[in-house]
Image: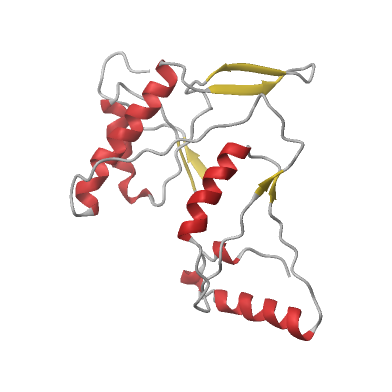
Length: 192
């Protein structure tokens, strides 16, 4: 049996994550099976995994209830070598309201301003392997180096508006089976 119970996102399709735990426990206790953690990242960098482990060990630490699973810390493969060590930043916006509708616009503005600053001031480095197998480095650009993952598209318009207010941060919307290639154009002159 292979799976990640923390990705039990299909509750709306009547998925029952408690069955995962019950089946695992039965295999271990009754069949003499063993649990093998697939806990090594071959893609990410130590700095990213360190942040993920710190955050999610606190958020997903409990496994008291049948549908809860504790957090298993991730490791990074030893073949992951500098210079591409990675970095992580957390944006925290000051409280701006009690409801989600009140908090969303300032959060979207902070995201847009951070992305614009990241690119304009060349604050991050991108590493790419060249034809000789060596690593070339260059500053981050909007041309495929940045991605924003969102929980739901219901408030996507707030991010689009914030990107426009930040001077026209370019974007494409990808979702579902097909990308939306013609994103709404900002009404500002001199956009990116």
